[in-house]
Amino acid sequence: MLPVALAVVVALVVSQVAIFLTTIYLHRALSHRSMTLRTAAAFPMRVLLWTTTGIKPRQWVAVHRKHHAYTDVEGDPHSPVMLGWVRVQLTNAALYRREARNPATISRYAKDVPPGWWDRHLFDRAWLGLGLGVGVLMLLLGPVWGLVAALVHVVAYLSSNAAVNAVGHHFGRRPYENTATNLVWLALITAGEGHHNNHHAAPTSARLGHKWWEIDFGWWAISVFRAVGLAKVRLERIVFTGPKDRDRVAA
Image 1 (cartoon, rainbow, N blue to C red):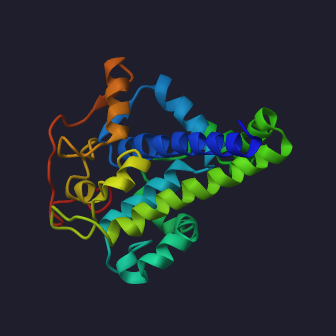
Image 2: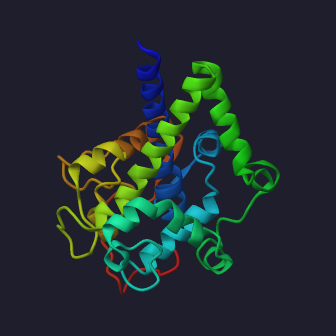
């Protein structure tokens, strides 16, 4: 395989790993408490997220919960209804960072995700985690192609996540009465996150695909973790919640 092709393939694999970790660990487990993970699964996921994204979980959780509390109204950190889907698609990372740096958002929406010993001494150093991740790619592929793979990974990961917030609130099906949408192609490349209308209708569900034909690779992975005793799902059935019934802090 040509070096450039190998670099792209490796980058896309790394991005998919990061996407799976984001939906399972950050989104379904931490943000919505729809499932719990044993330490044997949670800690490696945390390490991999640190080296592939540099994300601080409490910040991601707080920003996402605020999005649910103010979906597509004033206060939503990244609403395409308020800002336009093109702007959200292109600047989602900047919008996220702005909200993630707001102490009031963190204190209100991530009270249950305080920084632990590992965060204070290691994981809060995002630059170190990302540096280690890039270093591994450079060792595997060489300095030049390792950097190329790192760049492709960053673009693929940020673009995919942005699409859930931007495209996933503008184009697609709305089987339930909320402003998010379902897009099959987006679900396929984001481990099920493209079933965004389903998620906003039932945020406490660990399963994002509601119909048999709605493929949710994240749920498939969770099922494997359950089978080997590394995960426990909070609700076996899908429970729909309305805006008036939803907890505005940990929806």
